[in-house]
Length: 514
Ligand code: SAH
Image (cartoon, rainbow, N blue to C red; front, top):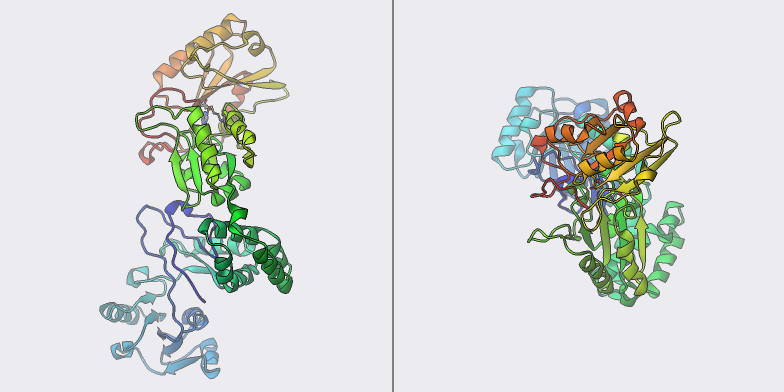
């Protein structure tokens, strides 16, 4: 096995991240890692395994696969380990462990069922600064052995720091089914042509673009279907016909990040988040989602400037254009769906004029996300046959809606940005004929661990909100479907105040955001 060490962030947990051509998955539960994941080169290094039974066998197998010279010390050997000895895959010292055996040893594993022996091995090795692993006794280990998905030279390690080997194995099983076996061959091909591509393409960004085309295009498809030679020919053809100019034009991805829960991202959103060179995001995008963007991508927060003013829409539009003109792949990450109260249209108009390629990726909009997570169907045969999405906030700060249309029977009204004008919205709806006892739901920070659903009626909502501590963003759902919340509410996150506000940027006030 060959390997490369790569730093990862805790939020990369569960995401299979390409770090061309290797990738790594780790489970880490805090910002401080319990251990540093590294790959140890053991070719021809001397490894000592104490114990020769079944427990030892799996570790011995791993060490052999890593190219180590393995010596087993044990008064007796189990049948499988014995077979390895007969096949001259290991050496055997037919004895009990003695501290002198740890001379000129690079790594030691204690795998006996005798706790005293294990403790002695651990103590001696630690004194001599030799990495030691004691099977099933994490306290005695200076390293642990992760679960491994082997697509050499791609190796994926899953570690739980001894917290739950079963969970690690479950994740391993999932990854095994997700990652085609041929990824190893793809990586080998990339390794063999790396230098040639370096010569053909001088710029790092061009090379990254080139390899992404290789891994997501025809070359990969050919490898996956077993046509390795054709894949090689195709790669050579690509190298012959490429140059840095091919990669000079940037592009823009206008991506909907959904209402908060990272699980609601689309696959395409995630894929483009991995391609971006720079990301522009605003305050409605949860930090956990921004963390899923390619680690090396430059992050630009455009929700507020230091002075606490929103970066003007015009400036954002210009920024998108200029970055793309520099040849960058620009990710514009927006809360919810970019085309629903997101000014996404305005942001790409300038790109059309300048012929910059772009893609628009839909996201789960707050209305559907919050409604689902609050257990409120937006339409229902007994309650509502249509649904309106409206904004409760106009450019000049006033609320001016087509109240007659909103008050039609048999429909649900979803109001975005309705907190500031809440009193006016409720009184106008009543004034235009909506029954004052119509149920209303105010959903705060929907789909996140801070989700709170306040149920009231049109006439009581303002008082109820004043009595509660309401934190934006919030969404209003008006109509008889709200009654179903009692029965259908399924998402009841535990109060998460101590875990921090997962959506809000520091300093966000009690203003409903745009
Ligand atoms: N493009 C976004 C909407 C942007 S307007 C979308 O499709 O969802 C911003 C408003 O969306 C907020 O004022 C609030 O009314 C609503 N909103 C966005 N995320 C929300 C969330 N997680 N919970 C409640 N409301 C949310």
